[in-house]
Image (cartoon, rainbow over all chains, first blue to last red; front, side, top):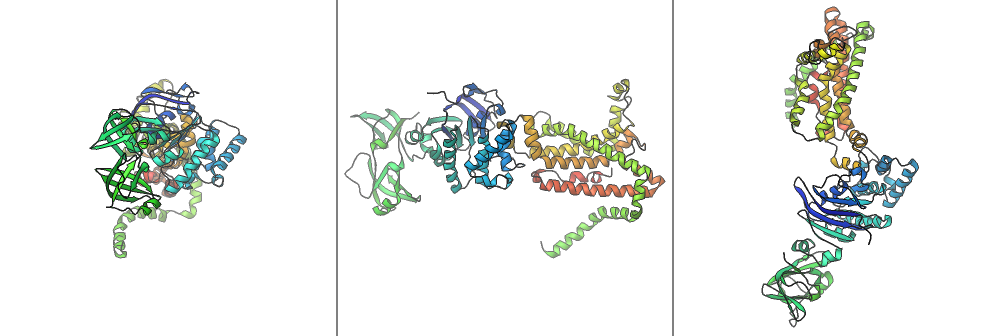
Amino acid sequence: MAQPIVQVRDVSLRLGDFAVHDAGMDIREREYFVLLGPTGAGKTVLLECIAGLHQPETGDIYVDGERMNDTAPEARGLGYLPQDYALFPHLTVAQNIAFGMRIRKKPRGEIERKVAELAELLGITHLLHRSSVKLSGGEKQRSALARALAIEPKVLLLDEPLSALDEQTREGLCVELRRVHEQLGTTTLHVSHNFEETMSVADKIGIIHEGRIRQIGTPEEVFRRPNSEFVARFVRTENIFRGTATSQRGRLVVRSGGMALEAESGPEGDVFLTVRPENVTVAAAPGRQRVNELAGRIARVVDKGALMRVDVAAGVTLVALVGRRSFQNSGLKVGAEAAVSFDPAAAHVFAAQ
Amino acid sequence: MKPKRNVFLMLLSLPALALIVLPIVGLFWRAQLGRFGSYVCCKPVAEALALSLTTSGVTAILILLVGTPLAYWLAFADFRGKRIVDTLVDLPVILPPVVAGMALLMTFGGFGLLGRYLNLAGISIPLTTTAVVLAQAFVAGPFYIRQARVGFESVPRQLIMASMTMGASPLRTFFRVTAPVASHAILAGLVMAWARAVGEFGATLMFAGNMPGVTQTMPLAIYSALESDPNVAIVLSVTLVATSFLVIIVTKSLLGTGRARERTLSMPALSRNGGGIAA
């Protein structure tokens, strides 16, 4: 496999209240990598460090195989989209997009062609001659994205590109970001605190917490097989049980608070067992005591729109996400007796630290 | 606010307003505006006017050139003793101009700190037009530096970072982004400093003397004319009042349209030293 285009090796730095500890990650060419973490996790600091705006105290950053620690930001050839877009207020949209190319002394004709091309791609042709101050959030975002792409960066760095936008604009722009990424064949590093946003664009996710990268994997891996309690909670696994695991007849049995839950495989000893709420089923009456079935009462129902979140108190609380229609057909409501169950194949078990 | 209370507040404000406006009215009342042209064209007035315009112009350029790096440094760098530097920069604003003149004499005068070496090289600054410029720059510089600094501080860091990642060196970023974004504050500061330079009196008198055509700027000419021809003094005064008024309007509109609106310092700095014109 080709060498990763961005390599971050054991990078540590502290910047006021924010810190990054021994961060390591690889981004491959044409990959859409999302660095996901809660506010204050240090993700922006790490992104700005890659952009060259801060120096790592220890560790190395390589871009395209070249060590970048001592390279000035202007010499790194990276496209950077800051959180508040940072469009130059004294320039029009077209001048903003052309900025990087002007600095690079590209011929006028080429600049004009490129500006037109990017404006077309992002649907902002009608805004080109407007002052950048008078744009809506979404328009600013598209303009700033065009500006960052104009220098044909080796890597596009996006710092919370969607956080300042309303829900609807955000969904539209998520699709847009992904489309632009694919159409231009760019490599993208996107920093986000929003889980849904991340799932809809990422090829690969790095989860960062308290300055440490906790897990790197495809959305599927991070989503289904979190490696720590933090990641499990962050990706909203909801059903997380700590217990002791032993192998019995080719199956893994996890004993937790008087329950014996089964999984297909996993480590033995002190573990966490997790089940995603969409893999939990709720039925009206207890069945014939199947594997991983618990009897209880419905404690709470939250309407999530297309889905209903059902909390069932069965010694422990199990959370299920059920389709709206099927929940309504089942006749279940708060206070009713119910049986909850999940398939051993849907359970994920990992060692507790 | 209720209309009644409004009227009460207006009445309370009248004495202060009268204190400012009455002297101006008095000045215009005595001025023979019909003969304005003939006075302005007479030699001493024309000379003083020309000297004031050239010296204050040179001063403004000098302040722009040497003041901008300092303003930028104070805006962006964090260093030990920054508060001391900051205080030093503001010092000339409240220093009595006569003291400023003394200080300049002690530095550039024949036996001064630098003057003794300049003398050896055959250069003497006191009582020359250069001395006028130095006196003006000393007194007016802080007005620009302060305002430009606030302007630079109000430029979002993200803009500077974005510019650098797009390939612009720090110097190009300054000329292409930081300075244009802060241009309103820079210009306002420069206009204020220029106005203060035009009105400089005390330091100029002490350090440069009062020689027609060489160091006699408008305020000094007013002072001299009072003894010989009060009408000339009045005409010059009226001219300076009109200039001050214009300067304040220009500055206010610059700061008003600037993005640095809330964070810029405004009129109190101007009104010290009587609007910057009459020292």
